[in-house]
Length: 270
Ligand SMILES: Nc1ncnc2c1ncn2[C@@H]1O[C@H](COP(=O)(O)OP(=O)(O)OP(=O)(O)O)[C@@H](O)[C@H]1O
Ligand SMILES: [Mg+2]
Image (cartoon, rainbow, N blue to C red; front, side, top):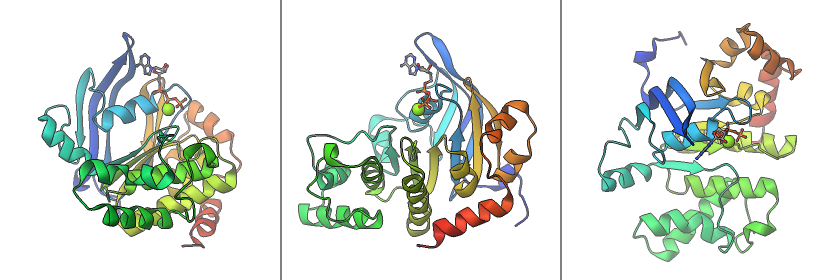
């Protein structure tokens, strides 16, 4: 498909010259980018670069000190509380670390957004939560508590909870964080499967370069709070900026054939 000008793409979320301050200093400076409907948009960068901070601002949880954020076409910081509430229901978030409630079982954690945001009856809510658990290869874990889950399972439960309301856009902070390569690859498969099944868009924050190159439509690299690069995997790989080259130098698998092989492996089970 020929590349089109950015204005020809439908934006599902965007930031214009966004600066975010915390503790009296700028954490993100002058960030401008758009996330397009249907795409998997990866945010990469070293620890402390400001990725989670940016994500919190994108989802409407922390206002920027300068600039404008739009979520599903609207500025979450310029709308009345009830409208923001309605907007947030169309967006799913899986926070870094999972943020599962330890006192609730797996099924209760996944049901929570439906219980808080809808008037559906408990039996319907249970069925809907079950469907998402099954979609995420989680069977027979309903009664377990978060402390009893493996790292990979906890990530998937957190993702199930983020998508239980069938959001149009899902933010996922560190899907692969702390996981072995096999579990990380399984999450990549599941993200692709969810996008195909639910026709949603994803913003994923990740340190896993192989994963970003394989499943993301575009990658944005943040360094010390600034957008260092933004482009397709091929464009990012072609950049010769020394700092980006250093990031890529850490991985041995960056060729187009290896990307295709990785995707083949991931999608074999779909
Ligand atoms: N509320 C806050 N007050 C002061 N400093 C903060 C606050 N929130 C974040 N920071 C600082 O902002 C910087 C970026 O933090 P952030 O959590 O966004 O990084 P990150 O890119 O997500 O890192 P990681 O990859 O380790 O998750 C860090 O130096 C952090 O200490
Ligand atoms: Mg983070």
